[in-house]
Length: 322
Image (cartoon, rainbow, N blue to C red; front, side, top):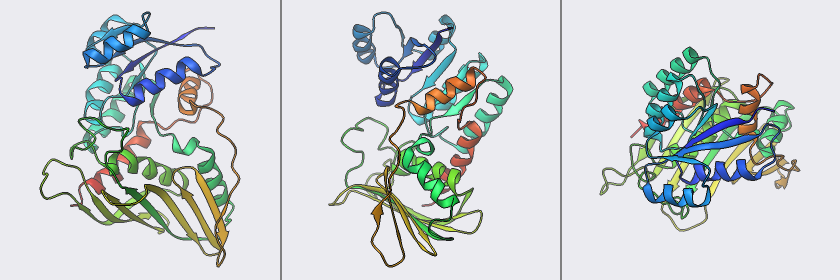
């Protein structure tokens, strides 16, 4: 069986996590991490010490010039997605990019066009629609388990931003950080996948007055699904309390809540919410496995750069509302 040669560009939390999962998760197709790239010299040295067989590079151009790669996983900060992706596509290499696709709508559009011209597999790392709780949520919605949908609430609450495990020099910045971009994009894409295309009706995004380059602290917005269902977004950071990242779906006959990403609850009108049984996650690498299947010409459920562009439209509408 042919080994699929994969490069990882960006050795932050997501890049290292992907490498760890590739190395420790059984795969139908053998995957070899052939080369990695990161601008941080110390990070590269630390990685090389534990992975002596993997080639390391300070620039992605040098990596792409020297290595024969089947697939590139891009896990650099958002404002670098565009130049790296475009360079990969010039070489007609399959590309798997972290979310959000780009750092502007114009960049996202150009990336879609280049991916189509390259004729390669192109995917964004949108994982929520693969999660068992979301699959069950979609099944319940399709079966009208709580009747017709009246409205939805999306709650994004972070006592601390960035969170303790997210300390880096960009996630707090206004140009490419913030919880709308980093977390909200997952839910935007998931809602569009389960319920339909979203559009922005109105929004107010609040930034700290004393930090002109800092990301948002609050967001109040109303989105609308194409069938007219309203989605009320409430987001806040820097407060005393617990983190909550959840969606509540109100129907004519009951309610469904997806609490903190993976706890699914439901109940009829007038009754308390109860846990809904969902299947255990079948894989630590559901999206990558689907990407590899598509590269091999097999069926696979991936979210392409087109999906990334559609999510980016909503993201940029929100980010522009202040």
